[in-house]
Each structure stands twice: as structure tokens, then as C-alpha cells.
Length: 413
Ligand SMILES: Cc1cc2nc3c(=O)[nH]c(=O)nc-3n(C[C@H](O)[C@H](O)[C@H](O)COP(=O)(O)OP(=O)(O)OC[C@H]3O[C@@H](n4cnc5c(N)ncnc54)[C@H](O)[C@@H]3O)c2cc1C
Image (cartoon, rainbow, N blue to C red; front, side, top):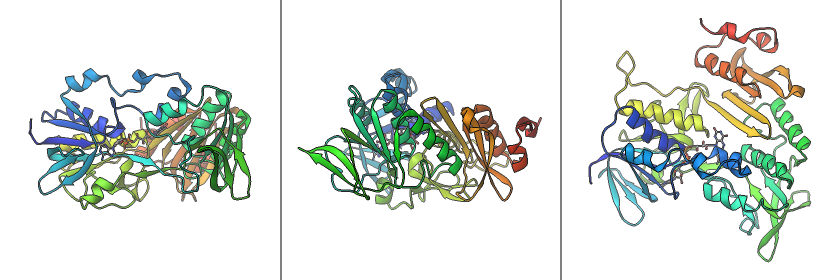
């Protein structure tokens, strides 16, 4: 069949959701989902949580069973897309095949940032992005071992919590002066540093990794700038990701820390849109173009784009821009961190509740205006924050810090 319909590159969270939402929104034409990972599209969050712990299997993490794709006439093609022929409106696949498109969606995600030090290629050095990565890493958790995690971001800390719970000796090395530094307030960083120490993890901050040591080709330790070598039976590197922009850049589309899109998720070519981890979009919450790495961002962008491509418009007749409130979660042992909104490092932090109770929130404000809420085991604050931040929040720092003040009273009746 050579009908030129909608072709989606990347069968991850965003690509899957775009396909599903296009059908939900009434798109009837040919729909092709091209992905370079084997198997059915799956969720990544459990890879560092329930799947890693052995509490969820592959069926639980697949986004849908095989029948869904057949029932919804979504053609799943397992191949790597290598180039876009924009004048001819064709997507080129490895092996020489090509697919015609009327509209192309790039949902190519991101890949692990490689560790730029000697020894990075030793056996026993792992990353965690894909199901294949997770399976390889899981294979190391069968007997008690010494694990060094490089990077105290979400993936490093989630994995550290799982490895500790399974009885491994865990050292986390972080180059910055606090954990989760890019994502949360200093108060929240301090809470999570204490929580991991209480789990028995050794956390070393300000630890610049300068090399990996090995014997017979296998890693044996991680060396930091102060000359310390942390012994390791294996290493997990979690130092962030880089967006997969090469396909877009190769086709001459605008790229700057992500594929640049407008408020409607269109690239600089109106026949090509993009979404998810790979994309930098204009956000009113950031006051600039921003690239977010979250399930919510990928899934909400996919829904928004499906609406645009199927002609859903605002009452004015204008296409609806993408403007969902950003939110995120992370599970570390019995701690559920939920974040909503986007804070700048200089935003002030107001505590609500007592961190010692392991149930509290940090409200962030800029010039007296709420910008974000970080909550631990306090889902109600998070859900309320989503509703407040969708509009123009009137919550003051004084109200946020006063547990006697009913946050719900601020919601329109
Ligand atoms: C271990 C882990 C835990 C996470 N936990 C959380 C969490 O708790 N909460 C949260 O909100 N987010 C979490 N995330 C982030 C979340 O999974 C991502 O933000 C989300 O998957 C982004 O969706 P996406 O569609 O943009 O990219 P992806 O889901 O990465 O999908 C992109 C797909 O495109 C494929 N691809 C790329 N280039 C090509 C090409 N040229 N041809 C064909 N295919 C291509 C890639 O191989 C990949 O399969 C986690 C991520 C990881 C790795």
C-alpha cells in the first residue's frame, strides 16, 4: 500500500500516544509507526522501578497488546529511519525502503549521554534508557554486589533505591553539590540525600569522576578527582540524555537543544511536526523554549497534535496551541515525589508540612507568584497545583506555608 498518510518516527511514549490519539480523534487515513526498538511500544518509567525490582513483567509495561495495533489499523514497522526527503515527502528507512507521508511526526526521544572518561567502554558499565538496557542491568542484580551509580538524577537515585532494597552495596557519585540539582529545590535535594543515606546508600557529592578502572576488560572501580577509587562490581551511568535530533537536522529543520517547534508543535516545515523528549517548544511556564523529559509532556503533546491534525480548533477558529501544565513523578523506595509547574533556581521555597513526617510539599514562588510545587507523599497538594497552575494562581507564600489555610478554597466553585 503506498497511500501517503501520517507517518510517525519513534515508537516510544509520544509516538504511541500520537498514533492512538489520532485514531481516537477520528483520523481514518493510513497511519504508520516506525520504531527502531524491537517489540511493542512500552513505558520507560517502570524500567527503573517496578520492572527493575521484578514486580512487573513485560506485559505490564507494554503500552498496549499487539491486537490494539491491528484493531486501530496502526502499522508498526520495526526499522530505523535514516533520512527525510522533504521535497518528495518520503521517509527513508535503513535497508533502502521509503514511506510516503502527507504529514510526518518526529517522536525520536533522547538517548543516554555517554560518560566522557577513560574506561567508559569497560564491560560492567551500564546505562538505563531501553528495555534492553534494563534487562542487561537486571541480570546483575541476582547476587549481592557492589554498585557504583554515577549521577544523582532521577534514574540514578531510583535505581539506587531498588539496588539497596535488593541488598546491594550502593555508592552514588554526584558531581554537583546536591542531588537532583537540575530538577528540585535545595530543600527537596537535602530531603532526598538524607532519605538515601537512611536507606544505607553512600552518597558522595562534589565527586567528579575522572576515570573507570578495570581488570581483564571488566570494570573494578570508579576514580574521582580527589584520587579515591570506589570499588565496583558494576556501574550504572545516569548523567542525563541528549535529544535525538539528527534526523531533523539532516533534513535542514531548525534544531537548538532539541527540534525547534512552534506553539502548535510544527517544525520549520509545516508538513513535519515533532513532540516529546526530542523537542524544544515555547512554554509560558518557562517563558522561553524548553525541552522537557517526561511522560506527561510527550503524551499531552501527542494528544494536542492529534487534535490539530484532525482539525480541532478553538471557538475563534484558530488551531489550539499546546499549553499543558508540566508535571512529573519519581518513585524512590516508599517516597513518591510529584512535581508540577516549572521553577527557576532563584524561585523562593516555602515549606508546607514537616519533612520528618515524609509527607510535605515545597511551594516555589517568583515575585510572589506560584511557579511550581514539589510534593512528597502528598498527592492532594500536587493535584491541586495542577489545577491552580492551569489558570492564574492567586496563592500567596504566606497561605502556602500555613497548614491551616485550605488550598482548595482557591479553586473556582
Ligand atoms: C528509566 C527511565 C525512567 C523514567 N521515569 C520517568 C518517570 O518516573 N516519570 C516521567 O514522567 N518520565 C520518566 N521517564 C522519562 C520518559 O520515559 C520520557 O520522557 C518519555 O519516554 C519520552 O517519550 P518520547 O516519545 O519523547 O521518547 P521515547 O519514549 O524515548 O521514544 C523515542 C523512540 O524513538 C526511537 N527512535 C529514535 N530515533 C529513531 C529513528 N531514527 N528511527 C526509528 N526510531 C527512532 C527510539 O529508539 C525510541 O524508541 C523515564 C525514562 C527512563 C529512561
